[in-house]
Length: 310
Length: 179
Ligand code: SF4
Ligand code: SF4
Image (cartoon, rainbow over all chains, first blue to last red; front, side):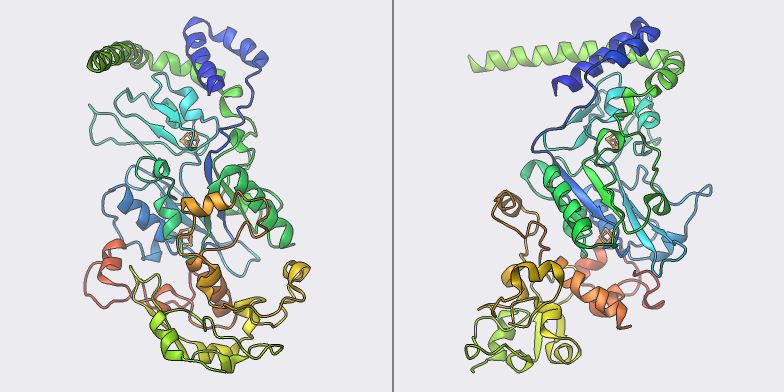
């Protein structure tokens, strides 16, 4: 945790101070990998089990009180929908979606559930100037709309294109993304709604460390059934949601070029954030202002609480 | 050999629960109930009437019951320990596969280093992971709604509008989307 916060603080500071220094310092920085919270939970998605029933999408919609879908969740024509030549993506009305991949030479298509992967060292978090994101000890990456200034840096930073912006209200910026059912389930030790709804147990919920063991066991005990790789074990510095697949990951639409290190260890922080600093200068200051006032508010709150105790 | 299929039915277990056969003889399909109502998980879907008799003619006991009926399962991952396993006292799915999969008790139990089966499916997973691949392989119905009729709650859950025919999803296009 310390490392996370330090590095984030360090990044913010150095961005304002000197972008050039960021690069040289970041290279030296030893805070390369945060091993993750020991008891953090995760989900192992087994592509060989998913049948594309979309129960998980329906469960998510209900749990998160999202708007009614355009088509029922048991309408499978959505798998043929394309937008700008791309398959369906998560957005502000759906935190998770399942896509179908017809892979040449395979008798049956593969289905892949997509949602926030809840990175160990989330790029959305490290890139956010106002600390709107938190990686909780349970493993969830959650978001606080009250401090968000709507600069959308996180949308650019996320290697999986997950955070989406709710445009409906310009004055109350809000990023919408999967929160691992943090408040309604995870904190109570319960599996997320999608996991509980899955008939195929394509989604296995458990301690991330246990899931890695399970994934390796499945690969080992079923020779030829899986590609020998757990996507998310190291991708983007490791993610809470991980995948195993019977076909090469790129064939199921995975970005296999995602670096194996936390995203902001990468040059990306320099290349993409420097120009961004220029374009989002006002938002940035708004952010710092918010941060400052928030701190005041928190201190005030603390004071009140203390007084209450006396 | 005493069996009471009705009692089994009433208890809504998938298979014959406690009754033991003569020692030294593996169970066979005659020991099994004819039909089982699977309603342990009914909520979004109506209970499933499962013809055990018919399935017992189409598959071997071990295809669903693994090593518990005294038939040898030759899966290399199983014979490592279960090559000589005798039939067990309880052979119903839910005797081993729990309903509350991934709830805290189960996640904590996984901490026990003496447990070998760290990756055992829950009841719902066990059914589908065993039934669906075989149905696909044998060209048996494998759409969601070929076994499951939606309840009203299920229709709300899936946002199914229009006429209430209790059917899940497009009934046509058999096995179009299942793998
Ligand atoms: S997948 Fe994207 S939104 Fe989710 S934690 Fe990782 S960087 Fe953040
Ligand atoms: S509920 Fe499970 S099987 Fe159905 S689409 Fe989602 S992950 Fe796949």
